[in-house]
Image 1 (cartoon, helix red, strand yellow):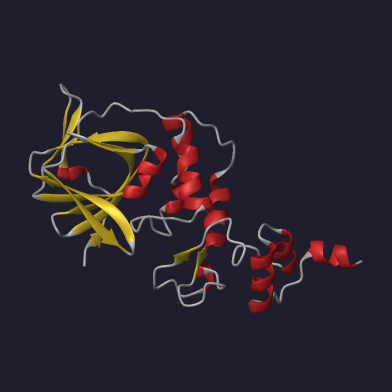
Image 2: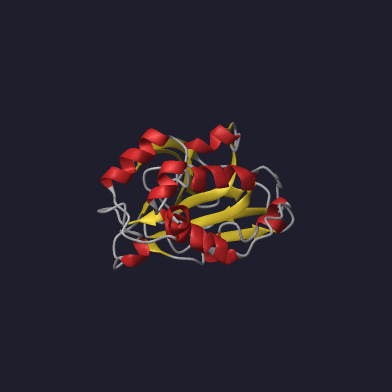
Amino acid sequence: MLTPISDITKFFRYEKEKSRLVFIGEDLNVLVPKRYSVYNLLIVEDTVRTLGIVGLEIDNRYSAALLLLSEIEMAPSEVTEVTIEDKQYLKLNFKKEDVFLVSTKEIQNSSITYSIFVEFITRGKLPYFLSYKNIAYLFDSALTMTSTNLDMDHVIFEIVYAHLHRDKDDITKFYRNTDMKKPPQSIPLRSVNFGPTSTTAKLLGSYFDDGLTATLISHSDTRHDIEDYLRS
């Protein structure tokens, strides 16, 4: 069992003259979702260029997540493929003195914000290393790192993810209403079956057949103003 950490600076050395970051621990695995290639955010050649949102496993003791809304280029010793929670990842292995970041200069890509919104929120395809606590901070640096002005408060994303994270044993129950001891299940924002909380929203949304089935299976016990208005 790896111990989650947030500060990983002690495992790297910054070489100012070459503007690069070198790994100085013993062993590092970087987990990169293969689906990044769908958005042209994963290119494997002599080096690996990818979106800077990746999982880290350090010295077989620690785990962390890198949350950079930019492209990064890495030079691992070995690249293999692994499956974690039914999702495909590239596992990049680094040994001591391997170059972790070929260049620390920011590679801006204005399409990144849209890509991760579609992947993580609309489609609900979250990598295993994004937790309930750190996911809401993902878009905080969108303006500075991608020059994309979302023009919305951080709390909006907290509300969105609080709605999309559910109890794994009962997907109709919000994760925040559980004891939060087990990892949550994330649903897509466009989920007709589980996204809407009212009968009307399910029936008026996309895919009427799915919405109708959802209303029959999962009844809403909460009154909504719009439904009271439509009945009047």
